[in-house]
Length: 399
Image (cartoon, rainbow, N blue to C red; front, side, top):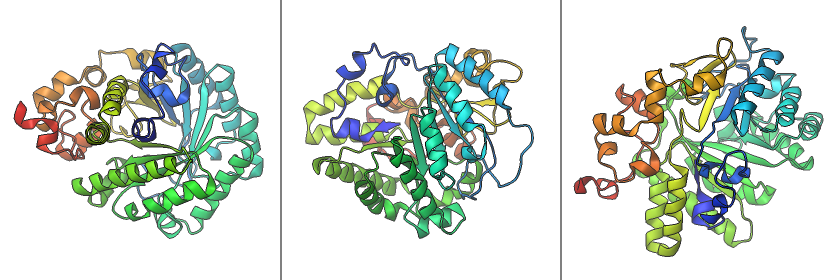
């Protein structure tokens, strides 16, 4: 992820993560992306069940009971292993995680083990009672998915009234004093709503938003034609930069991030070279700490049935099951060719890609999103088709 507000609005300095030694367990949550040890933040898709029917759902969730989900005891064993391994955060996701009655118990257990516990939810089921439970167990953050304003969101979510229900859930969390934020997946159908989303942040005092670039996985693989063109992506990022800066200038320092397209980092840096060269130098240092895409390194995923993935979008390739081996053992086993490749990907990209192989930003973006390259070109180590930088910007002609 790229911390737009951190980098563009100067809310983080290179000295900030250095104060903590850049160790995952010591860093506050807003600095985790700059850790040097990259202990994985783990997304646990604790259920595949969901009350909505989102058109871009990577988990292909449905409102039915699925067999073979990890039990409460198995979930606690996973948390024990992650805590001992040094994973700083567990993100409870789904499907819809609030459909599991043991969510508060498992979140409390993670907190007891010294981990930060956060959830990714559609928000529609968080009534005041649920919000209080989440507060009582010490939940660090609730990320609510919205993909547009009212009609746009409801169309994506497959349920009329989903927008209003999600906002009620978010407001219930706010009233309990839980940090909240929004998650927004950008595509052709909702990019027009980005200004209104920024208005919503300001009006409802929502302190954080993550803008996700589309990844072609799950039901999202059927939305390739709905992804923005490269030029449209640039314009969307420009708009996000402009509106973020405007919020900060108005005295509302919202945390704004973009996720799943690491060319956003070099693009922002090049913009700052023209606007503020001194800050650009600091941003380059922070981007170098960030190290770009972290699939198989600093982000991992455990599915409802215990399968381990490089991130939540690699549903077609698992490294093993925590019912057979602990996550920590699976994650560090580089006898698996793909796991080893993701952890040491630069030579493989240079040998198989074209643009990425010649790109001067390879160390900064780490080859961007490998699962998207595979989806389009059938080759994990090919170019990421969503990189919108020009040949001149990547230094193509200098190679």
